[in-house]
Length: 84
Image (cartoon, rainbow, N blue to C red; front, side, top):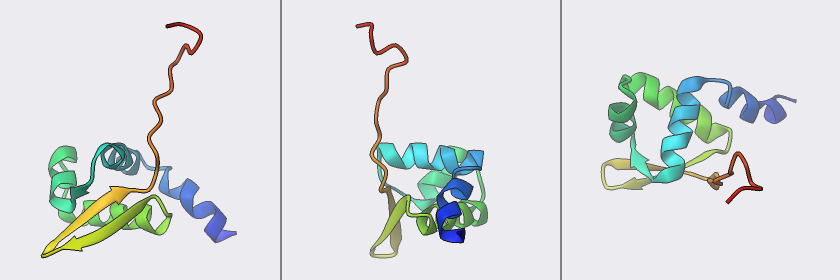
């Protein structure tokens, strides 16, 4: 049951939703996420780890940098799909 709840718990925090929004647009390193959101390295790393464990992110090493990207496909959904 815990594995089933993991994604929902990961999405229950505003900071993690903001991170996911940033990372669906482009891949970033932790320091870029910190800078955009104005949060500490500890807070950024903790929340990114929760998103990664829930299956929303993938991390890769590029030298000393850890580059993070979203595994979620970003869909643009119109509020009024019947209008052009």
